[in-house]
Image (cartoon, rainbow, N blue to C red):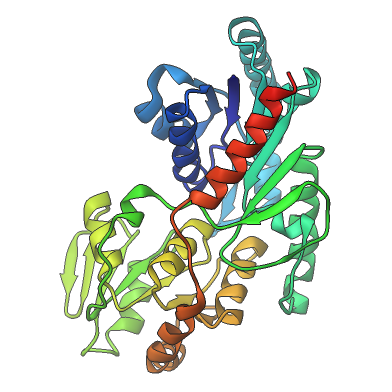
Length: 354
């Protein structure tokens, strides 16, 4: 069976998660070709070489270090016609040279359009669909209502009409729509094989923010050792060790930390839950998906959801670490077996019906 797999280019979470699924499919003997853009294209190209084909995806616009809806709209409006022509050319090449039997989309539009125009079976594998296809049992404050409605409408329009939705999530949610199933999040092999211990350091992972703000808070806790990634620094300042990213070093520090401090990105929080690390989460402003993830971290008892990183909130969080660790006792996940089992079952059914 030939499979076209679409991966969005903004952010690396989709790419690292999709890599695990693509590895599984190739080992099972499926012929997989991948379309992606930006950083994800480069990452996947390094792993799958000739299987990966570049398309032009959505760009996010930023203002004052934050995602801006207006800047995003303007940026994509300017690039739209040129990107459309590029993608149409790639569309024709894919149609001519590959002729897939089935399409998998990880919240990616090119692959969705290809599936619909060729009337191919379509599988959606991503975490975002939980906002539209499931009931969220968290309190959504007034300040997040518009962000929620916007995010849900985007999700609803992104990969409609799939034959199967496999929604990855570290929390349970009531399914509201047909052809939908909640499965545990996709975990990288490096995290699955890491030896977990409870050390004395706190791992800090920031996708946005400044080293100055971290120092302002962390220097108030001289007896706590912080290891911080994401600031593009290699520096030791008192009790704070800023490190440049390396996968081996990051996974080692992650698996051996006492707790983590991060924004609200799904991949990192999912891995923290898998490793059973208490989480201090302060989601990026204006990104409802991050707020949702952080809110569920607190609802599940795995940590705290705060609007920002402050001395007082961090003191409260550190005092509750033992309670958070106890709350992880009910969480169980055996790698990616459930997702792979559900996916293999659906693919076999499609293969038989050909």
